[in-house]
Length: 269
Image (tube, rainbow, N blue to C red; front, side, top):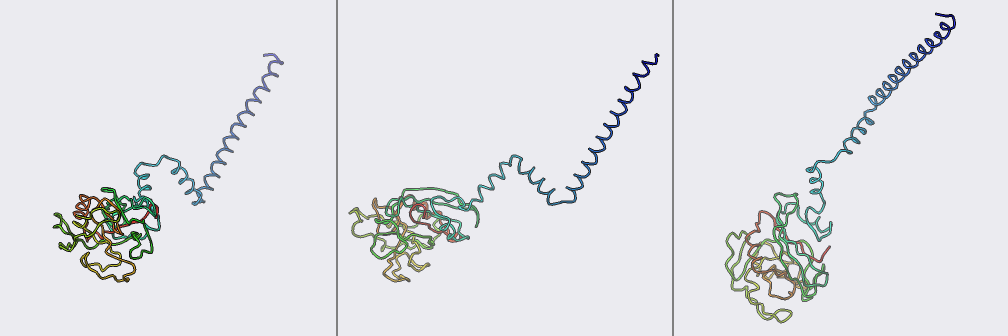
């Protein structure tokens, strides 16, 4: 090999050795950096937990978890009422009739039967029917003769009627000839058959007595004898009317052990 060839080969070898040293240094620096980061995270459990949670939250959620979140809605399956009204429903109640009025001054409404398997669980709608309430709508301060229905949450503890109770009726039931409607309705309609079946709404009355009980614990001025009864094709003086077959269904379903209640008022109350 000539002297000039040897001279050219030395710089080439030198350059290759320098490149190898730079590569080794880069690997060493990478390992040091990784070790430092790992040590920082390992000694900061809060940061590590947050990173793990962020990764978990970024993954698609299982359908059953999404369903659980929906079931945890504060309204518990009920619609047409406020959270304040829902909060007044006794926690132990497992049967509920929800009467939702079209407006505060309307006599037209909808009644729906809800049940739930256990206290605190979500409500499930079983059936729904057209309904009528007081001719002048709803009131939170009802007075005798004002033709409004009382707004609120009330227990359902006693039943009765002109006819014998439907098979399976479990509420205390008073079959009595006194359940004969007299006169005419607010719009002049016949009231015949209106009290074939009734469920007393515990507004200004003594629970544990016949719906015919005349005693009004809060005074005569508030009125009383507010019932769920058979619709007579017209607004009421304060009661809630639903179809006759619906009344039969209600009596066949309500169970004192389930602490049934009625929740009634205008939409959104």
